[in-house]
Length: 242
Image (tube, rainbow, N blue to C red; front, side, top):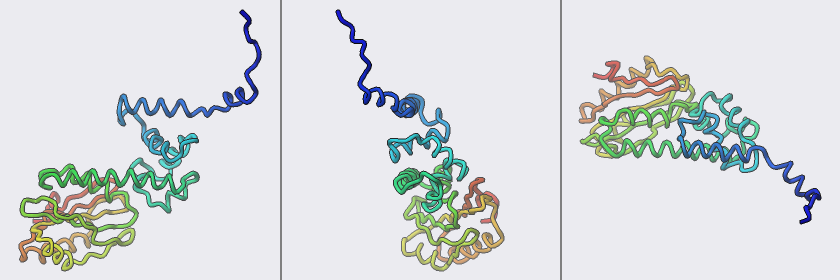
């Protein structure tokens, strides 16, 4: 039997030589995720899996590492605003949309978790949701969770967004909104973009003003939670709300 010893066509040889090295890497990473879950992956590897969808034909490991270097953590990357993401070379509108989509999904899941049962009995889930929603934002936001008589969530509303260290809060408008929703209790939440969740003197005074206006109308302020990159602070735990 004759053996064909001719070389493969030039185009085929060139195609083999130029096969992207990352194809096998992508499948290996997906397999590790399927078999061992997210805990088996480093942050940059989990970020790679997200980027695969937005960038199908390029090695995304350098971009994943560049994003983490720029923003500091996996959560910070997902929460970064689109203009800042665009400052990183390689981030297209498609990449930014994919990251924002994952962040939105995490927020939606967190909100669903605290909506299923009384908020006060699912405190850990509430803190996780607040951190996902606000802890990594670059501007202060003030959020109010309106609760019914059974402490179930009626509405979750951002009342205002301000600067890096201040957001305007209007206690009478907040209480008016509670009455419109027939809410009998609220939990106040805001973020400190500096990362440190320690309450400031203005935070304490503003909270007491809301308590004083709400109490005569039968509305209880259960807590005021401040979230930041470095953790969270609870006014009730700190005995700043009686």
